[in-house]
Length: 305
Image (cartoon, rainbow, N blue to C red; front, side, top):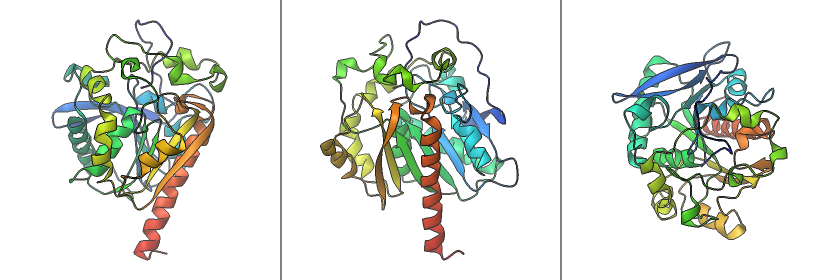
């Protein structure tokens, strides 16, 4: 859920950051578009797969409103391949999936796309899913699936997603419903000048099927979480307004997870759209630090030097 306070209309062309290029993957005959950044020197240590929230696109992770705010450029500079995908029903796949896909359908599509990606690109230690808002539902569902992505799943880093809404069901955005845009942003001082103008390039319609299923997430979550065994980190913005993140809600979020490690953190100076604000670099560095910790734990368990 990541809408902008903007009037509908034609979107300007998206200009990718330095070293970032468009990419299209095949998901069992459905094209998934996105953005790709690769390390400038040598093979990747791992692949960070970035999954955007509702009403957004892959460019959410390539913030061009200020220096150092793009996850793609930052991750590539630190030795990772970063793949930000337009989820099924967005970008190139919208023509094939005008109603979007169920969470189960998105999970199968992502798995197929990553299978193809693994045959074409080096993966390093495997895939690490970094997801925002409704993209976090897909990350959790993928981790819970019986058939994980080929090459292995290292862990999950999820921002802007909980298991208990802080709003009524009728306040959730969907097709023809804008929702309360301030809940996506928080205080405007948390965003660089030009963030909203550049954000026009990122806005996309929320597929109807996705919007309907979003309201069911609190009921779906426990069963999915009980099958997630890889490390998980949740981040809630200081001004998160869509999801409850009080002590009781966090306890309910963590309890069903089967993961061997779960972290829940707060991001100061941020609203729901963390990766579009001034706090983007701080959040991205923390997320990549969690990836580093996951890699270190894996190397230690394997007895690698």
